[in-house]
Picture 1 (cartoon, rainbow, N blue to C red):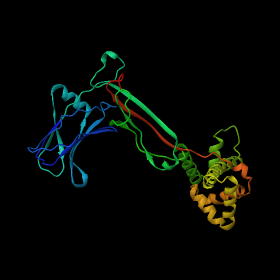
Picture 2: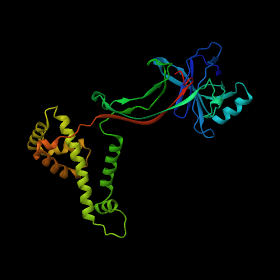
Picture 3: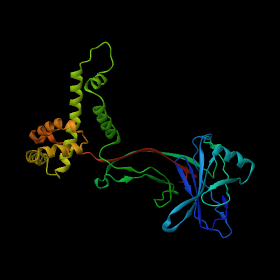
Picture 4: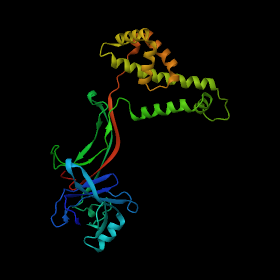
Length: 321
């Protein structure tokens, strides 16, 4: 691709299609004609609906990039015009400059197929990498964002090559996204529904049975407190520093005796519980402080990172890479 413009600073070309993006090397020009002559492979999900976003960026002081010109071009139009012209010209919307900026860009579409006879050696094959999660991550990486990068290297070569695809950054946590979302939904239910409506929802909408509102509500409260108890046991085990359950129980009892209100409020803030749940939490803390230490052993949660994404990588030589 090339550019004809009256611009004097180094420019780089950025192409974005869906979540995939590509950027060329910055090029300088003395006569206003910028030439890259580079090729990129992008995945098309919807041929009739997607746009190819083209941007020209100039490098400023402190490596700050500013968009000089941009345009969204229909993928279908790029393919149709490239069939009749070797290098079609496209007009870009230039920001803060007079005249028009012309972009020379062409493209070809290659559909996916399982037939080996249609293998295109310059394009290769499509590799789909599904990333679910990583468990037992070192504890020092908790609450830090992690990414998965895929590289294509010849033979049994190790890392060092340019990443061909990467996932979105996701923070590590001891609580999975499903558990965090479930806790948010439960807090919303507690705020926005009264006891009768919530009990009816839990018991079901059966017209053949009479709904025992009080019994359904007590069942919900009991299951809710079981989750609190489990999280508190895990928290006490982590805070004990390896001293055992007896030491953590002793510390909790001393804290309640010294500053009961402060202990309950602090624990409610850690568990992200509303104010109206603090009386129930106080009774639960009393039970834990008086419980038998051997019954407080809880399995420590490991640090996990959940991506649940699919990475797509173009592999030119599947048998050799």
